[in-house]
Amino acid sequence: MQTVGMIAEFNPFHTGHAYALAQARKLAQADVVVVVMSGNYVQRGEPAIFDKWVRAQAALQHGADIVVELPVTGAVQAADQFAEAGVTALAAMGVNTLAFGTEHPEVAYADLAEKLATAALTGDGFRDYTQTYATQLNAVYAKAAGITQTDPNFMLGLSYAKANLALKRPMTLLPFARRGIGHDEVGIQANIASASTVREYLRADQSVKAIVPTELVDFYAKQQQYSWAQFFPWLKYRLQTAELNELRLVATMAEGLEYRFTQKIDDAQDMTAFLKQVKSKRYTYARLRRLALAITLNMTATAVNQARQHPQLHVLGFTPTGRQYLNSVKHDLDWPLLTKVSADMLAPDGVLAMTHRADRLITTIGGVEQNYGRRPLM
Image 1: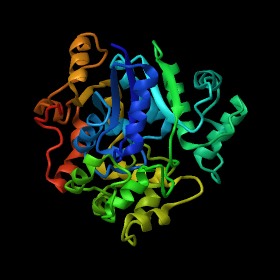
Image 2: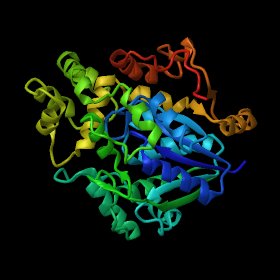
Image 3: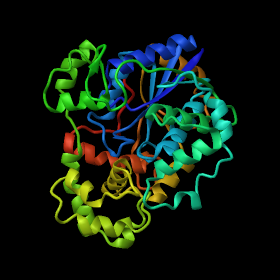
Image 4: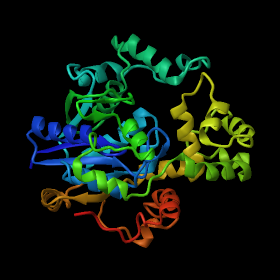
């Protein structure tokens, strides 16, 4: 069966995503569309507006054949690490084509990845504390490969291409043009809005009829929503009670940020105020939100490394076509395929320990079990 894969967050799923899945299937002439989707937490450093099961169901109803979870240890990372986690999971699923929407589909992404393979992405070139890492990275890209575009999906496509280049059997890259509104832009164009606009409408109880598939309008209205408003008290508690040595173990903690975070938390009443207190030219808001989320979830560097050393394919759902594909490849996959989560997987030394730790907070707030005993949606 011809497969095409996409890496997504679907935060939440909307008409633009339905278009992207259809384009991927059409352009790849694929029988099966496999999606690796962020679980309950997303790359911008916050909980997804709906839990992973809600978002997986929406995707399966509108073009995806299989949805596999991208665990929190890969989802809440900078672009290169996020891309590596998603690309390696698709490759482990036996996918042979990687599709992605971009502002610049005409670019030869594989060729650019080759040029960037030898670029120095650490060291003295990244020690200018008056600029963000992203700004300095763009300068390296421009010098190494003549890249001057910085559009977000173009840059993410480059990250996919670099991760794909590192595979033993690289997938065929299939970039296609995004349609409608730009990433994080406000407004609606051709019945497509950015995910941030859809979230804004949902949280304000405004109608999303024009920008999400019709049958999802009522479905979304019945679902528990999640945001930093619910999570901030937990972050504040962690920062006010954890020892500095404990905070230093958190993934991506660096350059004394544990001091800055603990010094600024007492007077902050919400996440927006806190981020303004800790913001500097060195770090973007997304980088700071990711670190804050890692602190809240007690996501340590050790937990991230363990997840990388013991990767799993946790299937959230599939269509009949997806089931047929899974049955045909399940004995040949590079990673274990999980279709039912048992107690031993969630134990402190289990393969889903960090996922369980992170999702417990979702269960506490929303009252819906996220892992134990859950079977894939069909």
